[in-house]
Amino acid sequence: MTELNLQYPIFGPQIQCPHCRQLIDAITLTDCYLCPRHGAFEAEPETETLIHLQSGRRWRLWDGKWYRQHTHPDGIRFEIHEALDRLYTEGYRATKVIIARRYYDLISSYLEKSGGWGTDQETKLYKLYGLPVEFSDKFSDDPAWEVINFVLEKEKGTPPRYPYFRLFE
Ligand SMILES: [Zn+2]
Image 1 (spheres, rainbow, N blue to C red):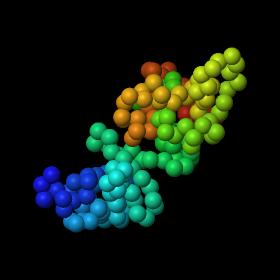
Image 2: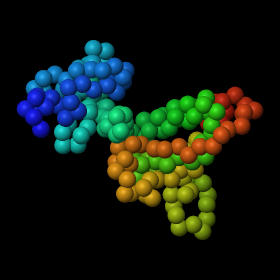
Image 3: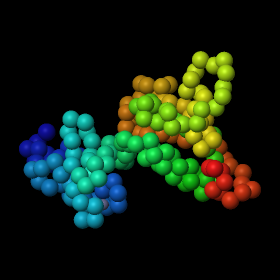
Image 4: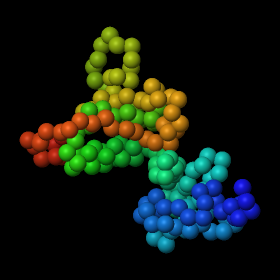
């Protein structure tokens, strides 16, 4: 690392604001970035996490993209709901949600449990918005799952007979 790099926080001289995606500058010789609209973000080198000082929201970076690190079940449920919404407008429908294993303790008690019987794979019984939920155990070798939150498995959708909101009742 050159001396020049040492002047900047771990994510470099500029990052995209996780809220508005605008490029924002690091404040030299601090661990902070400043967005004119959203205020200060602090980089935490030990955990490679970006923290919004005002709200305490946390993000980690994977493949050039910020992933919010949720601390409340509603946060991740809302993010999944938004992703389902986008998928639907793109003409797909989701067939399964795979959620990062690190959220198991946070979210498992908030998921619907379908009354499966005689199975020893407990994770197969969980549902969210009517979709089967799995946790990311089968990807345990993949470091992406330390950062990303979930993946939706999808198929080409058929036009729904109901207004969209009924899909998620
Ligand atoms: Zn911003």
